[in-house]
Picture 1 (tube, rainbow, N blue to C red):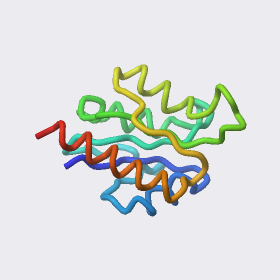
Picture 2 (cartoon, one colour; picture 1 turned 180 degrees about the horizontal axis):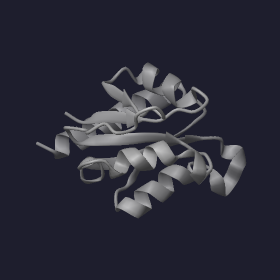
Picture 3 (cartoon, helix red, strand yellow; picture 1 turned 90 degrees about the horizontal axis):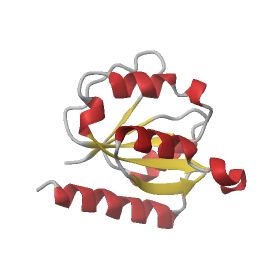
Picture 4 (tube, rainbow, N blue to C red; picture 1 turned 90 degrees about the vertical axis):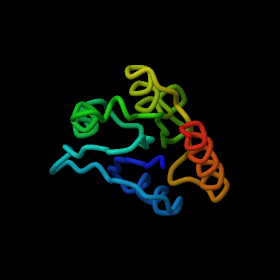
Length: 126
């Protein structure tokens, strides 16, 4: 089963994950050192790199980077080239795809599409 790991600063990403309704681990600033035991998708908002230290710590912990299957990014299209830039940077740096993007906390259509993306990634693992 593909799991989800996410990081939320303003709560938009958390709201999206709650709507998706799949098992998910929230990366916390207090203790980002959590080992993912299964392949997973990382869901992150678009923020300055210095605000992503907990995500970087999480990815560097044990085998988390190796288990990463892809990155999904949330953001605001008004920021043009900076839209989902954090997801793009992480994906590029770790050699995994950006598997999904959504604006703000996602629409109902985004939730359905993202569930399909997760299911497709899971089916490739079997």
